[in-house]
Length: 407
Image (cartoon, rainbow, N blue to C red):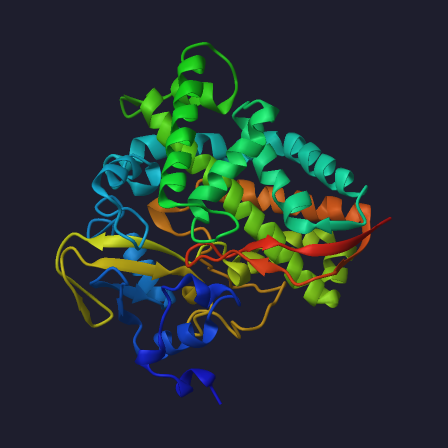
């Protein structure tokens, strides 16, 4: 029996962060897809928002940026205070065309296939250094000792940020993405301060690097011009927050959650250890299955209809990626973790003009990490229960105790 048939609309709560402590709430998401794919969900502060759960409908909202705006209300389901909203809207993540295009094109030129190929030796060296350092620990926290370190080192190296600032960068990032978790977040004032401090540091970096010459990402961005527009110091301050936060959270979630799935499936682990050439396809399945981000929000700019449901101008519309990634209408046997899955149009990185800028960098980091891990360790086993981040947006773990046995 499909357990989703045992619940009703009154049982649906996909807002509370506590609902995600046991993982993606597949039972509720399945019910939404089957019964109310565009679902009106109450918000604890009053009013509500539309939850879009099917793959095709999430795709439709992602494509129609003239109807569903990232800028009008930003990407969080909670409405932001006006002063914070203004700053958030200056991030690339919160821009709509035409403002979005030139800045994205300025950034994306630094994440092309050729650029990533040139970066591979540096990323490989970082992965090797992190994995080899973990050989000194038989008992480790996979998150803290391995998964966290690679993305922070990679993005900070690209930006030529001093190494003594790397832990601070990660702390600022955690504060902004996991503020609802008592172990990682803080008060609303703490979170706001972290965002302000991070943006200020980015502005200071841009001021130091402007027109100085150099091949680091900051200098190249500041010296670039696209469609007659240059990237200003203020533009970069906003970009800096987005690049570092996204660069940390997505890749950390991919590596840690992906490894956990392999620990639970020894045959898959052994297959990839024996044939690491299969990692690219497996990593796509890790992304679909673990989906580092549950949702992003859009705001309707006009009255519209979505999957037969009337949407009013000003309504909040939430694209539920971690439901779309398990939509039976798009994926064969979606509740099966299949490292050989051929058709895999997952939305772990979003879609369209707001597709994650660092998507291919995250893939590269994950592949090189697993390759190095398999070379250095004979086994990995859980020696405790992994703890999830308490969040309705970030899908990942904050601790993952393991026992490692080096080769």
